[in-house]
Length: 101
Image (cartoon, rainbow, N blue to C red; front, side):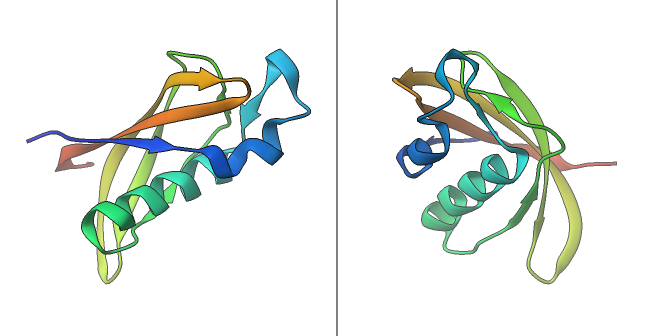
């Protein structure tokens, strides 16, 4: 079963406010936002690592890697910008059904 979660990223407004149309979330911000959203949904905060920044434009996406505390199994995660209000993007976080590898 595919897991989908919309993640409001209003807390990242300060990081994006001065960036204008070239606004982007750093790889670290993307991972942290996805971790926080999944923690709220499932009660456990995973570790999500993203290799690159994500443009704050609808349809922009990146692939990240998720591991859970105490479990070295890695899962792929797709993070997609679904909407942007000013410089504040909403992200959809989709965790792969099967482990990476």
